Structure formats: structure tokens, C-alpha cells
Image 1 (cartoon, protein in one colour):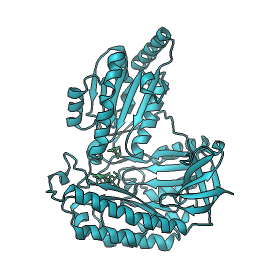
Image 2: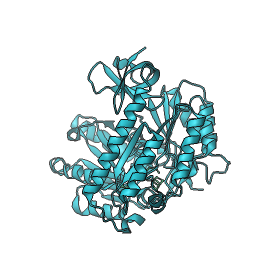
Image 3: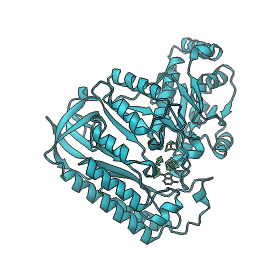
Image 4: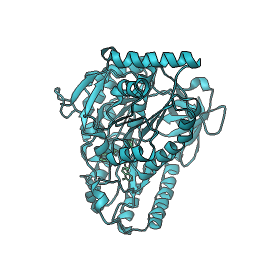
Length: 469
Ligand code: SAH
Ligand code: SF4
Ligand code: F3S
């Protein structure tokens, strides 16, 4: 069992009171309240961490801003999954140098998946010496202590050797828009050969079901209409807990909570996806008829090299079972193009799988070499131009499939949770349907966060246009 910590600011009065006092002193001196900018990169897990960072900061006397110029504290909560994600952070960090020169009292922190890698922490120290605090993915609960050191003691902090733990009771400031993120587990034990996540997020650990249910109840009471359950591989939920429980059972328990809300979850690893899980989607009325099931490649040879531990046939049999048990179910997937050694024949297998499944949407990535992973040692001879060309062919195929699938919804009623203003401009809203289709429709901003029924009028490749009923 991993260590379970209970977050409690009153148990660390030395840090908490010193930071609050310092913030109060600075506010009084400058006549401005203290503002923090928390910028989160990467996946929903990181977004959930960003909401906890904000929760802790709020209790330490900070308000929030999106403008670096007016922030007294800037935190970059980073992602390491691809080189491009890291480059963006380095670029944005470089841009903070001027601000820090102008205002030495500005505190800059870098945390999250990127910071957790020793060679990156070293690079930050060398190339961005004006960064005050560096910590990893499992140090949010120690933020009061780090701020105390940086703010009250004017000391630099670099703490990336954190223990894998679970911290309950952390304050949280959730995003608005109707959807609340709820982590059911942390870390990953799968070690897919291309992936950095197990190295930066630590070993897999599941939260206790009673803690998850209590958080779900708070979310429902706060008026959210969607709960998005998060884990790198939710299908292995429950391992190591005292009570024998699997993810399907957890879904049933959340489904049984009273309230007007829907449940989505990600990510399901195909190797651990069971008929029981699919039967549970079919049986639970609040669980959406939607499954994100990343396949990564359609070629058995590449899947074996990726250490995914399923093959094309096992994957397709799951899809067939889901189509039979949950009529109309929507699928989405992640696919990596240009994994080391991927041949044209392997890629053709991916295209044919995509055609067979008929996904609603795909998240597609060109392989990015990650230091320290197994795949980083594999010879990678395919020219980049060939990889981008394959990537474009995959996108074009998916566009055709999405539009065809969206056309099948024309004239139908869809229940959408309005998330934000639409791309078309004022007077339009956008949100996701229960089937996870992005929908845009004319509507008043007062509807944001609420479920609305629309009739689908027009099918586009990436979204549908509709009208409120
Ligand atoms: N736990 C999830 C996904 C985590 S990362 C799962 O198993 O599906 C999200 C996606 O990023 C992965 O599904 C994969 O498609 C992509 N990805 C991860 N590492 C990558 C790399 N080195 N290069 C390109 N894409 C990568
Ligand atoms: Fe990465 Fe694989 Fe774990 Fe997903 S399951 S986070 S792809 S190692
Ligand atoms: Fe997520 Fe990126 Fe970390 S995808 S788990 S934030 S490496």
C-alpha cells in the first residue's frame, strides 16, 4: 500500500502562517492583493493537479490572474510526453527572464512531469537560474513549505525526489464549464516502450473507493453535470487496496449516487479492458456510451515492440463486443505514427484498423524519442518527411470517417453540456454530447455548465452544428 497522507494546513503552522504573513505584509506595502498564475500543460491528470495547486495557493492568500505581468507567483505545471511539449515550456520560461529582471520579488516555480526528470531539473538550474522552485508530480502537498523557503527565507528549492504517495483532502479550485475532473488513481506500471509517464508519475496507486465517492458527492453538490474519472489505466483500478474492488464496481457505485450528472472516464488500456467493463457501460444509465481505447498501432509487430501486451485481434474483438452490447457506442483512440522501425506495411495495418473501428475522433502523434525509455535505444531510420506524410494520410482518413459518423446523427436529439463560448463567436456555445461529439449551437452564456438538448443540423469533420430544442 502506498502512503496515504491527509492534507492539513493547520498541521504545518510554521510554513502556513509565515507565508500568509509575508503575503499580507507585501499586499499592505504595495496596496495590491497577491496574484498567482498557474499554467498547466499536458493531459487531464495534469489539469487535475493544476486545480489542486490553485486550491493550496488560494488557502495561502493568493488570487489568480492569467497575465504574467501582474503575477507575483508564476507556476508552470509541465508535461514531458513529447519533445514539443518540453520545448514550449523552455520557450515560455525564457520569456520570463525580462519580468524577473524588472521585478526580483516575482517567484517562479516549475513542477510536474518535466521537472521530475533529473536531466531537466539540471537544465533548469543551469539555463534558467531565475527559477526559484522546482518540484515534481508528487509534491503539491508540500507547496506551503516550498513557498515558505522561497518567499520568507529567499532560498531556492529543488525537490524532485518525492515518494509515491496519495494525498487526500487537498483543497481544489475546479474549472467551470460543467465538467469536473476526478482522479481515481495515480502513476502507471505499464512501461510502454515509448512512454515517459511511468518514470515521471511513479508507481500505480489507487485511491480508496470511499475517498473517491466522497469527492464525487462534493462535485455533484457543487452543481457539476459531468464527472470525468481519471487514471493512466483505469482498468487496473483497485490493485493493492484492502477492499477487493475493480473499476467496473467503482463505476456502479458512482452511478448509484443521486443527482443529474453523467460519467466519462479515461484512459482504458486495451490489455485490461474486460467484457465486465463494457457490460457496466451498457447497464449504468449515467455512464456515457463512449469509450476512449488507445490502440497506438494496428500492427502486431509494432504493438509488441511498444510493449502494449495486446494484439490487433484482441483489440478488435473488444470493439466488436462493445458495438454489440452498447448500440451506437462512440470510440476514440490515441495513435502514434512513425514508431522506430514502423514500415509502410505496419502503417497500412493502422489505417485498416481505423477503417474497421470507425472512431469518432483520434488523437494522433508523431513518435517523439524520450530519454530513458526502452524505445529510445531502437534504431529509427524512417525519415521525418515520411512520418509527416503518413500522419497526414491518417488525418485525412479519420476526417472522412468522422464526417460520415457525424452525418449519421443529423436530425437526432443530442444531450450536450455547454462548456464555453463557441468558435463562431458571441451568441454561440460549444460543448460535448453524451457520445463525446463536440457540438456548436446558438445559445446564451447563462447556459454554460448546464445540460441542454439540441437537434443536430450540420455535420463537420471535427464537430456538429445544432439548435437548442
Ligand atoms: N495512459 C494513456 C495515455 C498517456 S499519454 C494510455 O495508455 O493510453 C497520451 C498519449 O500520448 C499516448 O496514448 C500516446 O499515444 C502518446 N504518446 C506517449 N508517448 C509518446 C511518445 N514518446 N511519442 C509520441 N506520442 C506519445
Ligand atoms: Fe504511458 Fe503506456 Fe502508461 Fe499509458 S499505459 S501512461 S502509454 S506507459
Ligand atoms: Fe500527462 Fe504529460 Fe505528464 S501527458 S502524465 S502531463 S507527461
